[in-house]
Structure formats: structure tokens, C-alpha cells
Image 1 (cartoon, one colour):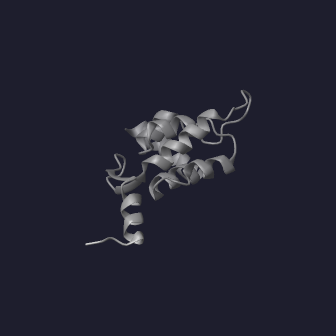
Image 2 (cartoon, helix red, strand yellow):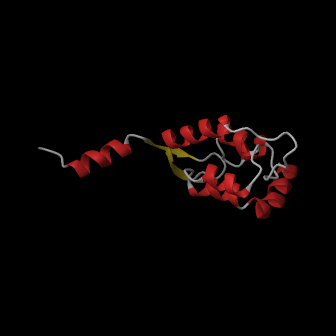
Length: 117
């Protein structure tokens, strides 16, 4: 049986995905590992001004506790603009995007959770 080019493209794309359980909420998430890895590598190359104000009100450890990959968390805490947060979050599953993008709303809840845990 011969596959169509559309089917071959779908299989090729599917091979770049992984299915994983988010440790923070137990949700199944589809991760685009290659895209996320490339994004992290790109962000590592970007310089950050030493006196720039961090946009996210979390530490890397708090982000990891919320289900963010440690490599992404390390880059996320260096971010100094909302545009960069959106750019970093673009290839992440929805829950992880929300953690980074809705930081103001989650910030107080996370710090409350961390004090109880």
C-alpha cells in the first residue's frame, strides 16, 4: 500500500511529538520537543541586561513545580518583556502557556500554594 504525501507528512510531523503527563496537574500534554528545544537554544543566545527587571514573579523552582520544563523555566525567569514571554511560550502546551502568560493572576496563588506545601 502506497502512502500519499499528505500521510507521509503527517507521520513525519507525528515523529517530532511526545506525549507526557504534566507533573503539576496530571494532564496529558503533547510536546513539540524539537521546536521547544530550538526555542530554548535561541533564547540562551540572547543577551539580557544585568539591570533589567524580570517580568515573571516566579523563581525557576516555582515554575518547575507548576509543570514547566527546567530548561524553559531557566530562560523564562531571565525575560524582561511581555513579547519575549509570548515568544517563549508559543510552542508550549496550553497549561504551560497559561502559567507563563497569566503570571499576574497566578503569582499570588502560586506564592500562597508554595507557603502551604
